[in-house]
Image (cartoon, rainbow, N blue to C red; front, top):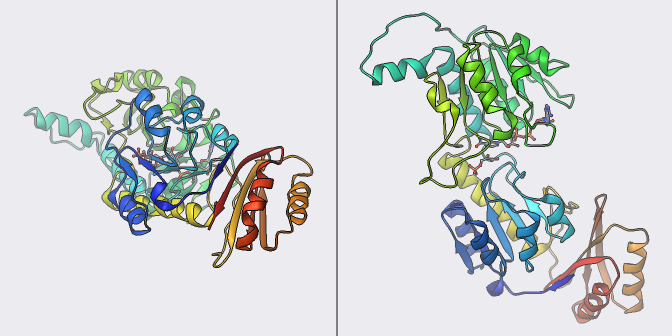
Length: 409
Ligand SMILES: NC(=O)C1=CN([C@@H]2O[C@H](COP(=O)(O)OP(=O)(O)OC[C@H]3O[C@@H](n4cnc5c(N)ncnc54)[C@H](O)[C@@H]3O)[C@@H](O)[C@H]2O)C=CC1
Ligand SMILES: O=C(O)C(=O)COP(=O)(O)O
């Protein structure tokens, strides 16, 4: 259990993986000056050392915030994923420590969708192979295996933010869109939801994957699923590397069952730009290989930097946890002239009663109180008169089940 009450000058932000300068600018503009910035992800030992005195840590998709890394982060107040995916963070371990995790759920959506749209056209025209031939001095002018996308069927697996954007763009190009999702989704335009993954695989000329990394999506596309794809169809994966069994994909390409693929994410990705990329897919000229850059446009990165920094600032200054992915969400108004106590606790029966008992017993004057819970966590925010807030903080911290208590002046 920790008790935090800090002024801005003492709050350390650890920003990794070259998050955009817009994040640093936003933090500086709000008066936060202690920012440790790294262009790359840190090796685990260095990460553990750097995170030990950090109050906020900002990462992208590479840094693994595991239970053992989080255990070193005794001062951590919040984590920001400057990207969409949050699979690289042990969300449960963070929640247990009273640490909310924020992300940027749609700042790079369009960037991924545009790349996928371009890849659909490139693959249907056989451009990757033709490009390789011409680079090698060859010249094969032919319409063989080269198709318009108009009238062809796109199968989208995971019809969320990115999947729907891809669907809208594909329809504008005259494609038929079918999709599979574990949830029932509102189909945009003329898209049709099919009941099973196999039904999508059976009809699509191009299958594109837009699911998150979860235990259920692990190797979701393996040998059996690839066999169910139409002969001469194409696979695109810009979701997570664990979703496709790469050896099975390599076999489907070697046997020419698939005509091509575009892969942006891999089960094992190089740790940095100076490490070699190893993959059985390197041998195939009909495969577009990109280094996990689906969301890497300047527009997306600038927007993400500003968005996640704003979430850090709001949580730090005001306690709002709106859009946290692992934490009770509370959107709070400003608290001028009041002190605000933020109390995170295990969600056990009678907790709120105990909190209120302490407050009334201490004679603290409450001007506002907010509560939100998830299955395991409770988050109570109490605005009090300035004179009494410290008494309340001391006593609330002592309540059994308290994970963290912070006071904002
Ligand atoms: N290549 C890159 O640079 C980028 C990759 N991504 C990846 O793309 C993923 C998707 O992003 P969004 O569309 O924003 O997420 P989202 O959460 O809006 O959509 C995901 C969809 O997948 C569905 N889904 C989940 N499990 C499923 C399953 N087992 N079978 C079928 N459908 C399932 C969900 O119901 C949801 O509709 C992210 O989780 C991230 O891993 C995101 C941005 C950039
Ligand atoms: O937004 C995501 O989930 C991504 O995969 C993008 O990750 P990145 O910020 O490019 O490491």
